[in-house]
Length: 146
Image 1 (cartoon, helix red, strand yellow):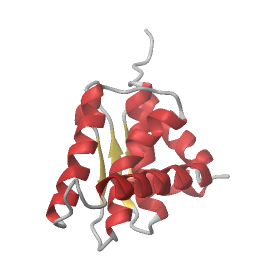
Image 2 (image 1 turned 180 degrees about the horizontal axis):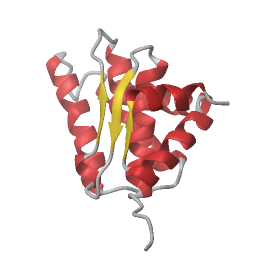
Image 3 (image 1 turned 180 degrees about the vertical axis):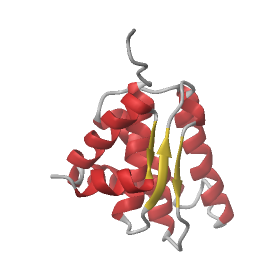
C-alpha cells in the first residue's frame, strides 16, 4: 500500500507562509495542509506587523508557486489576494493610491525571505507533502536543522 502524499503546491505554499512568519520572529504553532489546497493554513501567532510585512505574509504562497514552480489550487492564490485587498482597504488605501507599489513591496519582501531560507522551506514542504501536518516542536526542529 502506497503512503498518502499531499499536494506539492499546497505543501510549498503553506511552508512559505510559515517560514515568513518564523523569519519575522513570530514562531508557528502548527502547519497543516489537506487535499483541498484552498483550505490549508499555517496557524500563526499574532503580533503587530507593518503593512508591508502583512502583505508579505499574504504574498508568501503566491511567491512559493513562482519560486518553486509548484502551482496550487487557483482559489488559494485568490484567497491570498483577497486578504491583501482587505488589508489595503482596512488601511484606507485605495487602488488609485499606492496599492500596486505596496503589493509589489510585500511580494518582493516575501521572495527575498524565501530566498534566504530556501533550505527551511524545502525541509518543511517535504514533511508536509509526506504527512500533511507539522506540530510546533517539529516545525522549530525543521527550522533549526542544517
